[in-house]
Length: 105
Image (tube, rainbow, N blue to C red):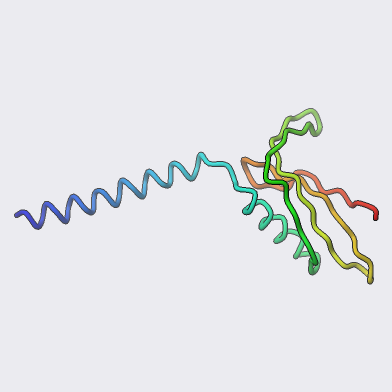
């Protein structure tokens, strides 16, 4: 009987731990590394990229009368033999790209 209780307790512990992790993950904000990875995935759909960066500290911006907590970052792409830089804003809560601006060099 002792072995059955031990296996049941271990299984229950694993299940509770898994559910707790799922709940914590849902409430956590996206990390700067994940935000940069998502931005790179979006930009790679349009072609290869040659460089990227991201500020690690979130900041608040106003866009169309709404307030967002964002990570600010940038991507460099080679288009027609010229380096083009793009700055982007990614929502800290959802990971959605909020804004992209082409910068002139």
